[in-house]
Amino acid sequence: MSNASNPASEPAPKPPQVSESEDACGAQRVQDRVGRRYDEALGESIRRESGAATLRTIRPGHAYTLEYRGDRINVHLDGSDTITDIGCG
Image (cartoon, rainbow, N blue to C red):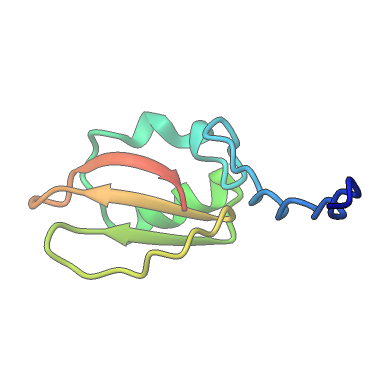
């Protein structure tokens, strides 16, 4: 038997890392809106002040796509349209 080793195969590249601390959509700048009642004017001010490209409202029981977009700000609402969370995605 030969002692020649097989050429080492290169490992697959690792997937890109998405840091939880990244704030590409500017969500940290508008956290003071959590707890307020959502309306279109408030939504527009959140999008504008955050610098996000787009804003998506997420309501309980509604279906949404799962793709992550770092430049999109998500505003999570409860059943009475009160903002419960604001984050990128």
